[in-house]
Length: 438
Image (cartoon, rainbow, N blue to C red; front, side, top):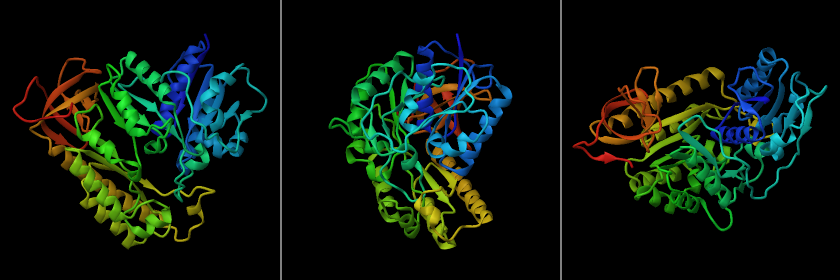
């Protein structure tokens, strides 16, 4: 039985696709082994969202060649689409698979004999047709990703994703349902619905809220979480479903990028700072105890001190539980790469550190809101501290002291305190305070 090892660099969607490729390989007779173990095949699912991500891809491939010199190496993902010319010049790659062929990669592994030069499966354009995907994602984690959409039409000026993944397209509803049922059969109680621009799901007359409604009918599926979603794509129907008695988690990760209107316009974002703030305020009014995160980009060309101050003021005022902070990375072929006004690296570092510190304070404040209340936790694994940890539906990381193996159990916890990044509490069958979450 040939051995296969898979490694992912990048986003949740990349992880979802790697999990599906792993299942396809297993069904074709491969034994899946941990990355770094002796293997006959290595599949690397790459990322091109930043220079650092691309550099990580190249470094990883060189490391694979040192640790597994005889393994067949197949490279796919976004960097295989946008950086195919660079990858062809690297030693040690045997197969490069662009976006059009990515989810069919195992079909092209007719032999693991290493060629003298890499074979390339690549097209400049990507099909816009709605799609199905073979297999059921292979996950060791409690939560499973469920890919429902791919591609993006928004064309933000800093983003290479429309070039690496193509235009918007959606997965057929019956195929989504098939994988969701398969994931539940494997024991997963929560799925994370994901896509490049997941709120733009459109297929057979259905929209994202319809997909959520369909998934709620799957027996044994206890939680449905939406991954990062653009603010202009979140419907009132989706908020109302999240607010009501539903399996849909009370959680939104809504990218902001900047709180300055001039920078937002240069980014080609589809809202002003005021419009974004009004949406967030509506979401918080509609959904009780909503867990709210965002993405912030630091150092976009032309980000003066006043523009950064506007961002800092806006995110201070809005009720976020955390931020993901990214440094701007110029991407060849994007509109922003031609803009003047580069921000010095030391300035970017100072601004990033300031926002990260604010994010930690915001998270601690959000966690403290729930001290003394009982929350419902889907437990995942034992933390290095010895506490068994899991997540509430509104994305609070909770740890409890226990000798029990709580993996994949949903239990009530009465929260007694919070630290940076972790709320702590005790397992309890009941509590005098309000129960939060389902």
